[in-house]
Image (spheres, one colour):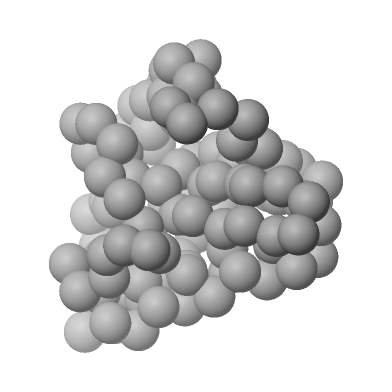
Length: 106
């Protein structure tokens, strides 16, 4: 059974500011996740963060961007947020934002 990719409306707005090449990389990772299943995709494409949160990793010429997602009932992969990564560590505020959005999805 195939997985389905969903994007939280707030994450859609955040993804729109990414350069086209990085947005394409994020959606390529999403395609890998839905095609092969989240348990079969790892580094360098995705990395666990904490609790049920994972990050999709994408880099371009000018910046490094990330999208945070979780897996939900019904074989759904939900992108919760997207941001430009400026430090080695994922910022706590981005994790908190994604966690809050995940709780909104029930």
